[in-house]
Length: 494
Image (cartoon, rainbow, N blue to C red; front, side, top):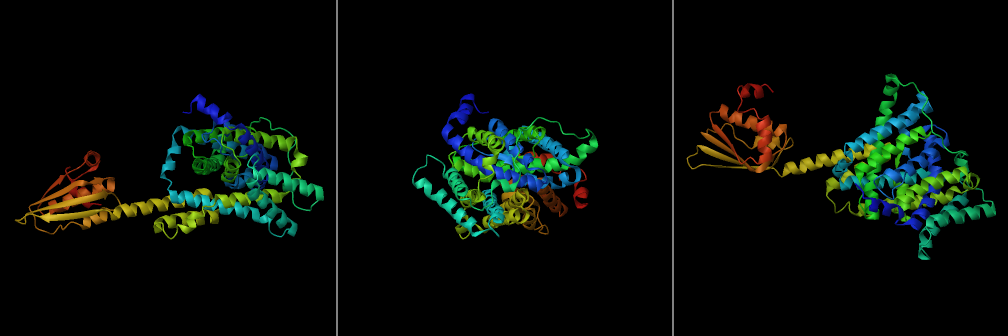
């Protein structure tokens, strides 16, 4: 739990930097929120209101200061079918339920599951997002006038060169201001934010989704809500981990789950769609000097102020300025060292990273990509541990007693090697299975131990198991069958 002093510092420890970074993020959020609304099949104001609400609430209740949350493509694509078949009101209800599910996940401490996401999966996730961010800019770069390329190039030059003069003002903000002034002064014919869709002119209001409150409605929205809750938290927690590294400060993953849930629940009642953390905007925020909760809060408030009060001016911001910023984000997000590391890193790690990238880019679904990466990581880890397993044996001088010494981890992936190490046809009076340098993990390993004991007994040998550590002894006592009546019949039946 964050102390009051630390929480206050997260708000007031970097006021100037957070406000300027929040302004840059707010400007970049507008076209993205509109685009995500279009993806979901709803009016642009749904995404814009959602971005305001989610940013403000996660700034207050989230567990990662400096991380930006808003309406996202990852959650928007999951709502397309629901909106098409049942309409906007069901979308709002699904958003509320998704938030409640996320709060429950946070209460259950599911944020701790992030420890099972390997470094290779994280790298693949980051690289895939960088590629997707760049691909999302292609519609603004294909089939456009040559002037667009000139402005994008000029924007990138400002972004990368202006910091050499001063870092007092974020270079992305300078890029937006300069290119907007140039565009308006010379009447340049380029796409603008206003071309993306109409900006709302009123504040969001509290409303209750107009749907029947019955079991049928719950069954309709539950699958969509569950998918949004899982994907939203997955992207948020992965982004939080990345921002942890960028800002060199820790975060509370379980509190982030609760904060995201609260944000989505309230947003559904504010007429907005579900959202989650955004790695692109979070990188923009950090690189622009944002570190505290105030940056995300400012982004949400300034977003609403600009679309409602300054909508006419914001609508005239040239898209090339925002495209330049997003290209900068994609370049800065991609882990270029990971390409060079393909030669030196273990092949399994490289396969996991590349599989994660390929899955995310192919499906445009972050959850699928991360799931593929985590599963492959688990398989490779199990295989590697299984290879460290070894069984040696020695026979007594009279040839009547053999001792098998088991070393390593005995679990489902090593049980075949365990069984293959025994010679059940050898004529012996006694057999000792020494597991003092081994650990028994699961029901498969207990079953293998049972089978080995019973096969030796079937051949007339007396079997003794020695060296069980406390944890192994507990699971063997609980699950083993070899000392129970009828054990041979039970095991042979399987």
